[in-house]
Length: 152
Image (cartoon, rainbow, N blue to C red; front, side, top):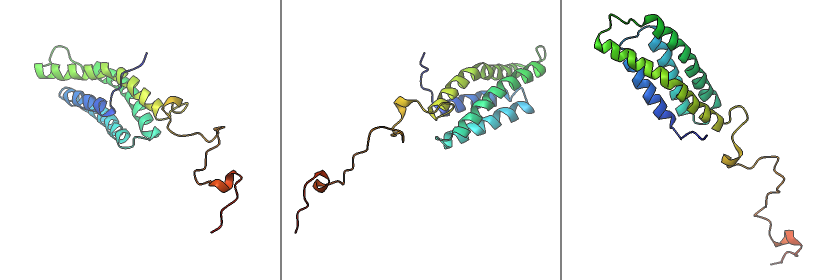
């Protein structure tokens, strides 16, 4: 199944917005973990060809899935939340639910940038070094084809 194309900037914007709203309710390690990983995502946007940036962003997203589960389960108070705090908690939970889908999209981007096995062959615009085809030399004139050079 082919994933639809999603821009990395869109993923960052959605998670930034949901994390900002989640910070209404959860403080301390929740914003630190999420905003740090979003900063790594900005690095991945800035360096489009960097495998390191996208792989660190992917591993950070996976780590924040587990950190968010622990943080929300420890600090979620059912009884004493106001409406605003319930909204913030809902946005943090929505961010948590969207992170596995975001990981799938970021993993696809990681593979496109050359992660694990390299870029897919159909998307490569470059000729490989091991190519059996000999390159044609556009500067070879008639003297290279067995004709004698003309004098001036």
